[in-house]
Structure formats: structure tokens, C-alpha cells
Image 1 (cartoon, rainbow, N blue to C red):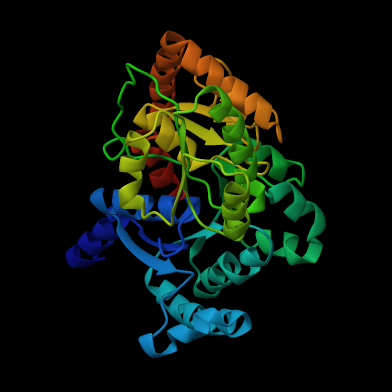
Image 2 (cartoon, rainbow, N blue to C red):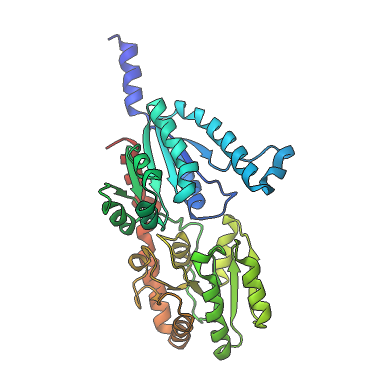
Length: 366
């Protein structure tokens, strides 16, 4: 081996792996898109060569109308997306974010199969709180394909246990939040300013948040509730508010990620009523911003929110319990401030310095 070849080999061994992140872009607002975008930025700052391949590619302007036609939208999206996977031949690692059901088949699966075709290291990063039902009921639509990944990564012990029930070995790497973006502010005077940042889909239970707020208004007439998000239940929820003449509710709709810190800063109490979940980034953002958190115990949330220590856990489908938890916070502001400080300490486990080493080791196949 001549000296130039030896130098070239040394440089190759020392080079950070080239990584393709295959995930929803922020055109689809949600936890996966936020995590993928944050991960891409953090990796680039550490010197990784990162290619971002969106599973929701933008359509040419002349064909944007296809977005309004469900079947044609999906077909055209898949044509552009699958064609873009040819770029994977230029990377070392394919890191595909995954949800459940049809989304699993349409988004991460083509990327994993393309990685196998091109001889690349394939990571399936599964995030969905619907994993238990997905693995139990989709049979040939999921299990043969999970085995095509070189590694399955999940963000929580909760999901790791779900996969272990089907004898899948997983690696746990937590979601993370950027503390530089979400500034902690101690609420010296706690006010009944409530915030919900979950999309308006049935499994996030925003209707229960509204019902709880109706009870809260009876005792705290100055209370406000800001609902940031969009989804299939929006009209129904708006009509419920109108029918019940519930004042103080603001639907602010789709909110871009760069605008989220201001929303948290304007609120004092964060409400989450989800019935299906995993490790919601919104709770981490609320912790980082100094809000008191009240949440149901879906998915990994009990590991994130320690009841009466870093937040309040309430039963599913129980608006009265949410209202009672708000009452306790407002009546015991000293305890509320203490819980918010503890939550700020807790969220440090979910930061880039804590997870960067794990991603680097995985990309280097260690």
C-alpha cells in the first residue's frame, strides 16, 4: 500500500459517517418533524454530512392542486418521494423516522428497503404511541419489514417494552429539546393562563381540555385557554365552544416551530389530555419554558412527569380532575414554583449533550 492510499484510508476511517435523515419536514407540524429538524441542525453543527429527505416532498407549483385530492395526492407524493431515495446511494447511514399503520408502509419502509438495496446501514427510528396496536394487529404488514432494519431506535423505555413483547431488540435514545430556544421563566405570580399545543385529533383529547376549562372558568372567570394546533376535530371543537358560550378560548391554529417559544412564554399552565402518546416533545418544551404541566399518563408520560413533583398526572377522560389540578396550582403557588424548578432540572436529561454521544455511537455502528 503506497503512502497516498494509506492517507486516504485513514481519512475515510476518521470521517464522520454521511447520514440521510428520512422524515417529515416541518411542512407537517408534529413531533417527528420537530425532532428530525432539530437533529439535522445539531448533527451539522458537530460536523456530520447530513442529507434531509422529506417523506412529504413539495409539489411543483402547477400541481399544488393535487394536495386537495386524497388518492392522487398520495400517489404523486409517493412518486416524488421514492424517486428521491436514489440519493441514498451517496450516504453511509439511512436514518428513517417512523409512525404506525399505513404511514409505516408509505414512509420509512421504502427508505429501509432502499438502504438494503444500496448496502447502507439502516436505522428505523420508531416514535408512535400506537405501537402496541400496530404490532399486535398488522402481522405481515409490519413484522417482516421491521427485520429489514439494522437497528430499531425508540425514544422511550415504554416503547422499548412494547417491542420487547415481540422479541425485538431496540436501542433507547431520548427525544431532545433545545434549551437555548425555550427560555425558562419563573412565574412569581401564577395566573390561570392555560395552553394546549397538541394537534386537534381524537387521540390528543383536546375536547377534554375544553371541558375542563369550562369548569375552571366557574371559579377563575379571568382564565384563558390558548389552543395551538390543527386537525380533523377543529370545526367540532370550535362549534362546542360557541354552543357553550365559553369565553377566554383562543384557537391560534397551525403555529410554526419558531413561534412556539413565545406561546409558552405567554402561558403559565400546560394541559395535555392525550389518550395515546409516547414521549411528547411539547411537554419537554413546557418544562423548559417554566410552565406547570398537567397531563394524562399516556405512553411514556409517567416517566417524564413525576406526579406532584415535576407536574400533575390526572386520569384519562376526566375533565373534573384537570380542573382540580389547576385549582391546586393556583391555590398553592409556592408548590407550583417548586414543581416548575424540578421540571427544569428534569428536562436537562432531554438535551442534545445528553443524546449526542448515543447518536454518534450508533452512526459509527458501535
